[in-house]
Each structure stands twice: as C-alpha cells, then as structure tokens.
Image 1 (cartoon, helix red, strand yellow):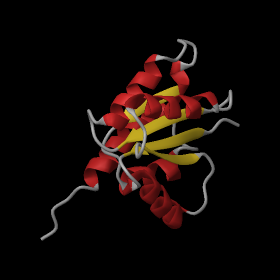
Image 2 (cartoon, rainbow, N blue to C red):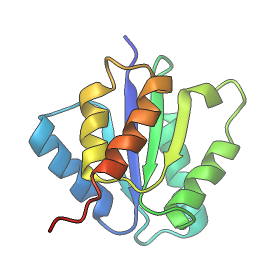
Image 3 (cartoon, rainbow, N blue to C red):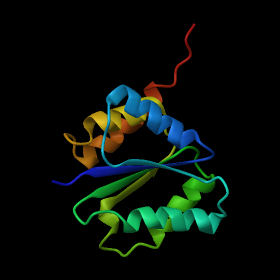
Length: 135
C-alpha cells in the first residue's frame, strides 16, 4: 500500500515543533519528518531535501511543506524538485507554503483516504481557515 509521506522544511525548529504538536494531537504516524535550514547553506539544504527524496520508497509519494514563500526552505525544495528525473516528479508534490497546524492535522487525518488531487485544495482551505482574528 502506498503512503503519502510528508517533509516539513522550515527555518529553525519550527517544522519539528509543528510535527511534534501534530503527532501529539493525531497520534503516532508513519512517514512524517521535519528538516531545518539551521546551519545549512542553500546547497546544503537542497542536498538534504534530495536525500529525503532519494530515500522515498518506490510505491510512495512525498509532499513538501514549507513555512514561507520565497524563503530558503521554499527555494531549496523547488531546486531539489527541478533536479528530479521526469518519471519521479508525479510522486513529488508541492512545495505548499505557509504550513500551519490545522493544515498539517488535516493532512495526517486525510492522506490515506483522499486522493492527492483532492487533498491539496483541502489543505489550502484548512490552512487558510486556521488563520483567524478572534475578538
């Protein structure tokens, strides 16, 4: 059975904290990892993303989530994707920018029952809906 794996690439420890919080709420899940840009050059971060892609089991897909559009995690993911062979690209999704806890929880709870084509718009909606001004 194939699995949609998740790599959260962020500044500092944000990705690890998001993954840890999501797993506390949703329970243990396979195939969820975080990668920090701390201490890595742009090329070092690209290489780290490429290593995650290379370790992807043949039957699985990988969704890249990043914190900010245009920032180093986003650029590194785009560069890593550009270096992939054409036949691998359909299994590599994203990067989706602006990762937050509602988006990540929705992903963890729906990735096994929702096709990626339907899941991506749902993630965007849930991520946006999680940003509110409470009065």
